[in-house]
Image 1 (cartoon, rainbow, N blue to C red):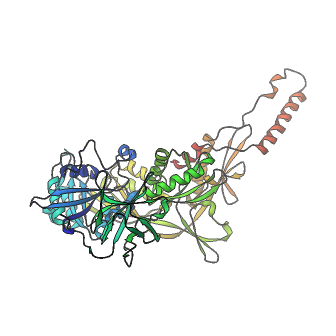
Image 2 (image 1 turned 90 degrees about the vertical axis):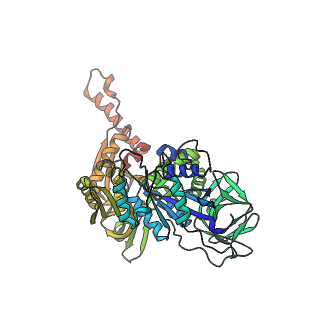
Length: 597
């Protein structure tokens, strides 16, 4: 049982909502790993259950007796399907030798299916195609089979038809895993070498590292070393992951498991790092691991300034559990001290905000999301800017480059018109379009990332009645005519509301922002001028009228000079108040700017 040839490591890849987690439940049930008490056993975060999406990769070990009577150990890593979590997928794939490609029989191949598939093929994984949900009345297994054959060029007989709901085809999937997926390769006699693909923070035991052993073995109690950080620890406990952790005396080549070594600080564990033993270290780190590159940046500030340190601690713990979150401290005149955080996309940003609130009770304000720009000055020096307030003065700038993405949209042919219009309005350019099968079209666009950051995904879903699927990867930086749009309240710029936008959109965007803020800023005892400005040029203005007391009410006759005197006195008071009064921007205003339609 203990030989490397009996181990199979595999993951499940699919588009969002194609039934990966339900299928994983059936596999766990079939191998009698756990009793299924409710749906999606591996999605153990409240947030995952509520939204019906997988956010974290989950690893679990199953024991399986095949048809020919052999015992196998199967390590399954369930992966997210949403485009914002493709980093999680890339790490899971690095720890596997095979992948189950799940396609929904009612929806067919979608954009994320293709991008995850390419990721798996790049890592030379063995692909087992599965058509899921074939028990649905509107399933089209034959058409979907055509799409899969065209996509990966497999034989029709290789495709397994299954249903995560009824459990049909699950036996065939397990047999296919055992027969088609190769056993891990590695040398048990070599120095220990293990790849960290995830980590979890436990407030009692510190950081728990999840890893796959490629060569050698890691024993309980021996001293281990992390390659990139050069730190040494004692492996207090090692073991494998069932629904809970199962301690073992050692982890050997090909196994997926965990190491607990009492690490207290989050920053000491880098996902993708190599673990080796101090007594007999390996020569080099494991290759093929990429650093995460955040795409969307936003400021996160505590509502109560005294919570700054606890926000830092919360972000560090979250970063352990979600390696794709990056953050650096920054300060803002309007909001005080906070952090500039990098996210993989808008859903990722929303999820982090929710998790800060639920898991750490942190109330935070998030500023307008933006992307990173490369700014070149007249001497040709390049500076990376994540925040409009970090932009140099206008006369010093030679040109600004913004990131472009290569977007793939798969949709029914009926919606091509509105989708084209949407992408072209967002300054996109069509590269190519091709028919995947019958009525489905694949469109390829180059679009500036800054344009899709705010509301692109929502609009795409609504104009295609939810059918279009969208996937993107960063392509390159290109020069662009961008303008910094400042919002001034009574002549004072509010740094948290400033944005970088394309010159063609600036005037319209500025006007809409002023109108929106006029609705949201409460009236004060003095007039508030809301202005949108590019440099020194004001492009839009709205005024929030002052609240006035009727000071002449008590005059019921007599000379007009009495009224004039009272009004003059009021005017002086308003003037004094305007000098000392400051305008409070409510939190609703920061959020409303995100939802400008």
